[in-house]
Image: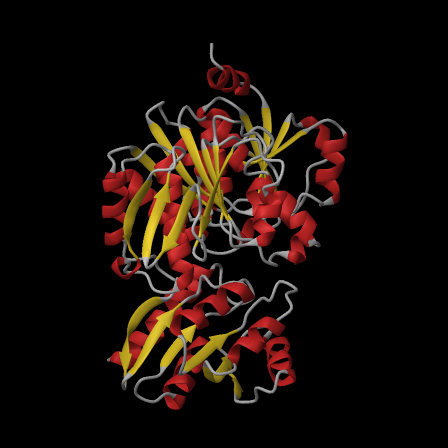
Length: 461
């Protein structure tokens, strides 16, 4: 019996508590039930706040429920499976770990029960675009591919019925990685590392350590694709046992993926150069998307995909929803949805991509970030700043400290879009790039982005 089948067999009758009933938690419950575990659930929401259909399922399946409360004693469980949004530092989870209860996340569970192979992409920014592009390349090659993880599709849902022919192309966050122990992708990637989620991780060192788990179990038969232009990423990759594959937008490399005179190139382990495409062939805009394309090409190439397939998929890739997504023209001004820009660095990247004459809509849950770099980036690019959400005053303070004073604060997205229309002139660009999480006003950045687009559609009527 192989390792995966042995683990699947060991789950039968095992008492497992799934903590958190979001998308990944619900998928973990169903997977564990299918594998014969004795499943219980915990969520901070009280029964009246839980989705009625989910509650009905839990009741009908006779699943023990701790809703709005924690189990006691915690030692009655063999394992906890944590959803990504659940901090590992909660007192009762620490108590369980110290008592010998195994603590893992949904990603780790998925890996242990999966018969397929993994590609894992992490970094502060660019994960969704790069992961989606890698998924398109894999599909174009004919491989049986599931694009999963932080991108919105639970890993465990794809893993439970996987075969040896399956490839899981996973966007993996620091929250998912910090609860792994055996997770080992064939190819991993670290795109960049800038401050984010410090309200959860507390320090950049802890945040980086979580990201580094993406390669912790790789060996010399595996590959780690890493941004050679980002000092923090290169430092994070030190000590990695996998073959290091650098990518660079700024310099030619002896090995890896790079931009040379406007052409995206891969140089293989024998030193042979292979052209991917011209930068001008890309349908996704901005220097950051050249980097994303280089990373995706490197991941696919070192996963064994033919260069012609890689080139075709990259040239045809239209981009992803909520990442500098073009939404239309109103009174001569272009509107862009960058709701996926949930941190300062992502918003600055979007400003650089659109260059000038920007009316920026920003704000939300700032995750304890310093907004100074965003404030500095406004000069010469942003004509007006329209703010909303909990941390709008924090962003306004940073902007005024940098001498930017054309600032408006509105109560909601509808008002922000109307204000932006009032301020805009033909040739301007209205950009939603919040530099913040959405959780103070929306369940997710997707909900926020779709609301922005619906507001723009109203203007178009």
